[in-house]
Image (tube, rainbow, N blue to C red; front, side):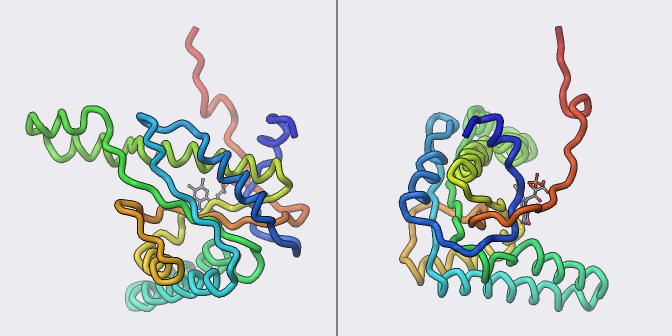
Amino acid sequence: MELQAIIEKRQSIRHYLEGGIPDADLEDIIKAAATAPSGKNTQNWHFIAIKNRKVIQRIADAISEKNESICLEMDKVDKEKADRFRKFCKNFTVFWRDTAPAIILTMATVYVPSGYNEYKLIGAEQELLLDLMGYRNPGMQSVGAACENLTLKAIDLGYGTCWLTSANYAAAEIEQILKEEIGFEKDGYFFVNMFAIGLPQANQKSPAKKALEEVYTLVK
Ligand SMILES: Cc1cc2nc3c(=O)[nH]c(=O)nc-3n(C[C@H](O)[C@H](O)[C@H](O)COP(=O)(O)O)c2cc1C
């Protein structure tokens, strides 16, 4: 497919048709992700594609349980907000549990940006260090580039994905499951996001994008 057509076709897909994903397609998708640029070419990512229903269910259960444990505490403070968070979890965090033929988990390492160690050496304030590492976070920018490649290649092969960070509050539980189920332990790597992937159902809605003049400034 032409790049422009793929870009225009991209939308978050949360409803899937029946049908699996051949391993070869997953491999092509991850190859595309891993071709992305990264700060100092660190390639600070590792992708885990999971087709095994038992492992997918275990991850979904862990997220739902974590959500409920947070909601039970929220109930004591604001029942309405707790119920909203429960609903959000069902519709936007674990919607894929029975329908997506695969999920892809992105693991990443911390990238120490230029200036960070130098600032540290000269005793810079914590706020400055947080500014470089946290707010501007080049490491996550690299992972974002890889994830967009992943998304676009999936469309090229006829699939739809939904990029998810809303399960990140269950990161520790997910990492533990990865350790137990597949023995994934790669030094310094932590869970940063996941994708649900499958053959897209037609007519899925996406919110409107901002007008170009709101997000673009041209200086001539
Ligand atoms: C970093 C990131 C995190 C996201 N997290 C979630 C999520 O947890 N659950 C979900 O359903 N969608 C998630 N999305 C999808 C966005 O909601 C979606 O991209 C946005 O609403 C625009 O819709 P579109 O992708 O259809 O254009 C995420 C997207 C990005 C890029």
